[in-house]
Figure 1: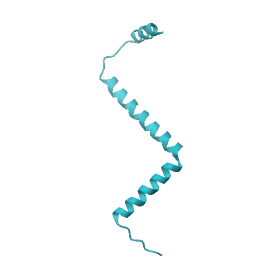
Figure 2: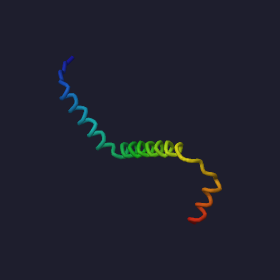
Figure 3: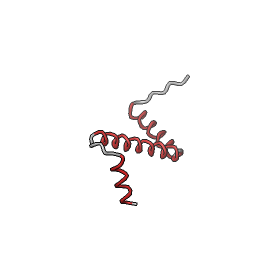
Figure 4: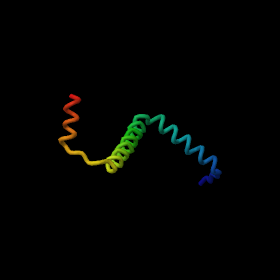
Length: 69
């Protein structure tokens, strides 16, 4: 068995290179993953903002939507 000795910087560079190659070869997978992450973050923010605002009735919402239609 061969022993390989790598210092921390060499190991970091190997991981960076491997991750970059993986991202370049699997662009669609990473693109979908990042899109989902961004959507989840936006949804979480919207939920938090909604929890801090005043409750509005269903009728009030439909009045606003009818005016815009």
